[in-house]
Length: 165
Image: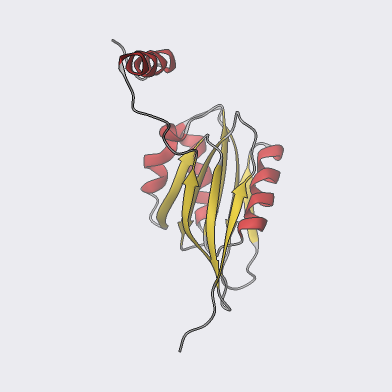
């Protein structure tokens, strides 16, 4: 027997200087584990984390070391409202600095995006609750990279310290 499903697009709201990681987990322990991972990976990184608990009290669980980023995570989690999803906002840290460590957390199931871009979350809602179908991360391509684009890209990576030569 099938049930009706409603689809919607939810925009992630964030300042331009903030990165976001959106994912799904399966256990309330996620809040502590992601927080410890960020603090251990990048001392001095500022972050805010929200986790949508999908059983029991079904609360949005919060952590972080920057009250503005914690509030931002809380507000975005309220709008997304998908069970077992988490949203992590980062400042003074890039997702590349923590992403593999977060992926290795035992209860993390999926990473939908890790970006500084504007992003939309595609949500499905049934009588049971909400789930994330995917993410639209940034804009569609406007062309193909040429030699000038290669020079710009590799220069940027050197500027960030990710390439030496």
